[in-house]
Image 1 (cartoon, rainbow, N blue to C red):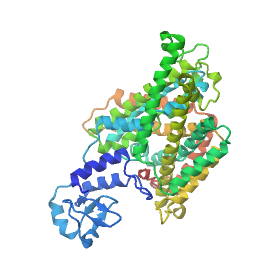
Image 2: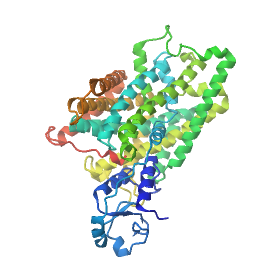
Image 3: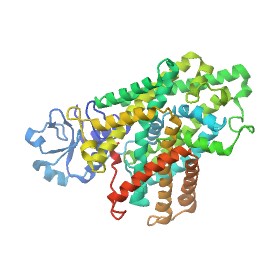
Length: 539
């Protein structure tokens, strides 16, 4: 089927936002389509579609190009710019095409909710309840305040610097390139840890269903299976992810209804309204709540992915900011409702059979075995899907760093000649994931994720202050409240949460940062040269 240039632009940008451009058995950097679509703005070429397998092209009108003419097409894996001799004069006179902005505010919000996932509070409920002494709800709400303020900063910076690098780009341009490199180094840590977290938590869930199987066997199956599928080039489709999210949302809505029924049946309607999840004077300890928030903030990881769609959105200056804020509010309110009902249904945090999977036990109490098994099954599949995606993202990032000589090229830039996948990177991540999962420290892994993420959040807030308050745009009046106070509060609250991280997480994170700082100092000759660039568009 052939499309006109305008129709293809609309389809490509919409499908890019939904993540549907995945070809099985072929490694493709995720950023290539967005980069090429942007490149069209500055090129005089005409736009069409070509088939990779036949190496044949089509003109904008839909007619097939001769082989000699097709060979002159500047290809970009699915989109081409026809710069052949016969079309150059027409191209010079034709108007330069522009990417259509097709994503509405609703599209952006749905994209962000899928990125964060509605089930995120489930993974933090047990441990945050124990660490906060029964005040898990407070940890979700306190983290929401920090995320909403930070989301405002992300939205404002995305309007100026639409880029896949996100925090890395904002800090590098508004503050200092070397600080930008360190922000990218922090993001690299997160990419490497995401598949590890998925393997550990997924294994803990599966062990609840089949406790007779040793944990080490389950983790080996998780890590080995994900690595095998990725090396073979098998990808989970975006449609499958959407179906999974729909099912998970249905299960969680079902939990809400069953939890309400359980509470009303056992304690009456008055039991639905209680201040105990917010404040229990016998247990409340502010320091413990802040420490627990450092882990519970995992609930919001991923909201910043909306900012990478700035060039595809209607009115990005308004809609990107609104979408990031509304996604954080939805996550906090919906997640807070889940935690509120779970705490009412299971008020004694000391009696969880297993802290890591405590929410599973709450589902069994309010909905019976079927709800327990449905939640376990869907969370297992969700962790496999997230682990597959996380491993590919980390492998792509390492591939980009190897290709650009940031890391040794022979190893990290290797692509399998048959499947065109970064095999060495996938195997390395698989081995590290399995080794790291043996400790079963999903609490430490989660805090390490937040170590890098919250440094990035603080960097974005600081960059917003520098960009809008200390060097405002020409013709724009700076505002103390909007340009300094809001990002300043976001920075302060993120710093408080970051300081609440466990000691071991800080030690490991600081070692990682010391390695990155030393590496950057060597490559830039004592920070006298521009730092090496980390191509985050590959993820």
